[in-house]
Amino acid sequence: MQRPGAAIGIMVAFATLLTTTCGAEPPTADTAGLQSVECPAETVPTELEVTCHRYPRNDGHLAVAVLHAAEPTAAPVLVIHGGPGGRAVAERHHWLTPRSPILTHHDMILVDQRGSGWSEPSLDCPEVDHLTSSLHDAYRACRARLVAEGIDLSRYRVADIVADLIAFRRSVGIDTWSLYAISFGTLVALELLRTDGLAIASTVLDSPLPP
Image 1: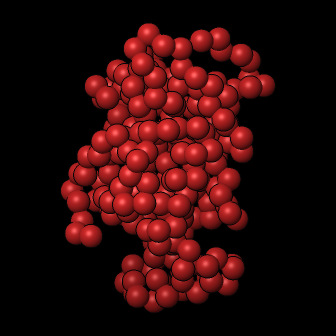
Image 2 (image 1 turned 45 degrees about the horizontal axis):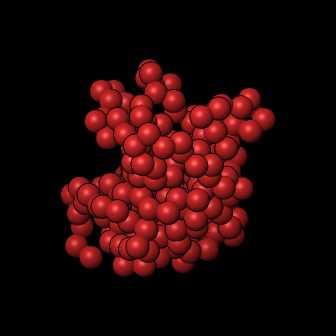
């Protein structure tokens, strides 16, 4: 596959995200709306290509990292982090050092859920760090601040996270992918299976929470 210059780097970053067959040339993904950015947090030493992006969504964006497989011949794997309030993009080293066998043939897509990690707006609460002796007051202050900033907290449910991921899948032209979900992320994965099951090839639920 040709790798054009930075002017169309977004298309290159996602060209291998689609399901392909052995020996087949990966098709070009529809990457409208994706923005390439410098990967946040520490640089992780790896011989694989790692690209980071922003996916505009409603009044903010989702942070995305793509760990490109050595030989991408199978469906990409979406990593659904735990929490709520966990992160995936900054934890990419878990898959790269040592390199996960998944990355032999599968691209891995790490998406920070809305309100989490490097996605914006962030629901991180610095108030808690300074008020550890009165956590309840800190959380109330955090909630009040978020509401005052115009953030609608009712839009951060599992159903909203699932809608983000389905919209992302369709935007980049992925027909099917596999899921790897951790902790709270397993609730997201179960809802994805319920609402978008035809697009899911396989699912791993790590430390699942009851539905």
